[in-house]
Length: 341
Ligand SMILES: [Zn+2]
Ligand SMILES: [Zn+2]
Image (cartoon, rainbow, N blue to C red; front, top):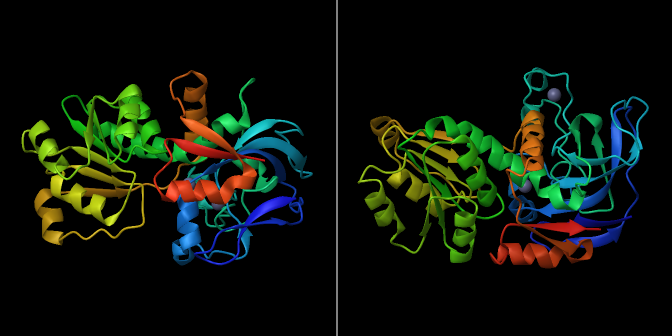
């Protein structure tokens, strides 16, 4: 089969013929890819920054945002049959460790993360486990929902953590209106009760945020901290969810956050420097959020089926992965992109 291989950090991917994955364990499932979402994490993998957290097994196939059809099943698979359309939770978790038993798949002690620590979905086929699969509703095409497997679930978990603090009369800033941000706006309107302000450097993306229900948009043009200060009567936002996670957004978030406020870090790549005196004096809460668990993806799929979450996505042929990654790097993508074999 054809697959996009990362062979060396900071080099374009290579489109190669490799062997189709095979069932090894009884709970293994081979998925025929219907759509593989393109994520900023793919750029970070190519840069090599994930090597610190999860050793990057070069050469390997990237792609952790997948949906498709069940193609082969192990002897122990009971809930799925060949041909079922499915969305794939990003990790194959063991189901036996304490984290799995607590429902936290992302913290699994025996985690296999296709696309990060094992071969992923920029390919014709992907190997995962039965535990990772959720059946799609009738009429839902894998390529139309693939980004919910990562962009969607990550926005969902962050908003679920933040929503209890977004009470009536509060202000929430959502920083970065890309693949995750535009989903988060809709979820925040669903789960929160405060004002939701979209912040981005791109006015088209801000217009999209308003369409999706943001109460206000602010262009990050250099004067944005002052505008936020005015809107919040000098107090700052109660909640910030940062989908960018670069040095600038960390710094600005710490400058504007209200006393006792909550700063959720979802995007990454930068370094957060904050004096400990500021943390204690302002009682800042800084909270990380990583993807989401199986049940969160299940809940998101139900909301999507009810028409409460819309996904702005564009499809490209699988053969154009490097071009799409380049566009993402240059900030030329609105919403999410999906590669289709
Ligand atoms: Zn991702
Ligand atoms: Zn586990």
